[in-house]
Image (cartoon, rainbow, N blue to C red; front, side):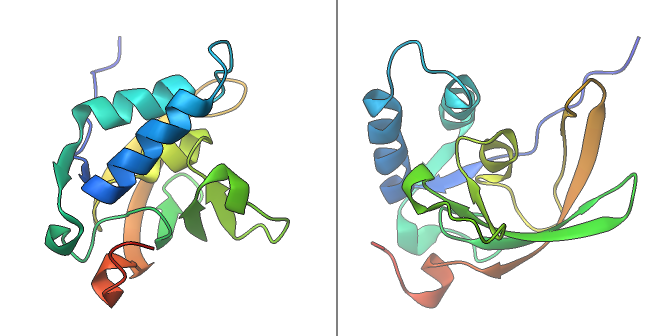
Length: 140
């Protein structure tokens, strides 16, 4: 039996919370890839004003560098709304499992998320390379 992992604290801005709630409401009732995970993350989040977001927290439109522990492989992705995903491979939708998992985490946090086909990946946030709030973009 494996020990239950405690999830790291999640902090999101009031602007992101409002937009994400509207996104969830706009999805069909039966649509669910990512919807339930996002709702769970929002339910446990501490919501603060955009100007009060710590500079090392992953917010919407933040670019984050993270490492997959098992392979030590690093990724750098920008967390975006579904309408902003493109073919560049550099953006991840908030509705993707990794997207909702990254939202609200801080530099240094570690999380686990399910691998396709079973098992889990352990991921560590190495750096938030860009955060809109840190750049003074509170209402982007």
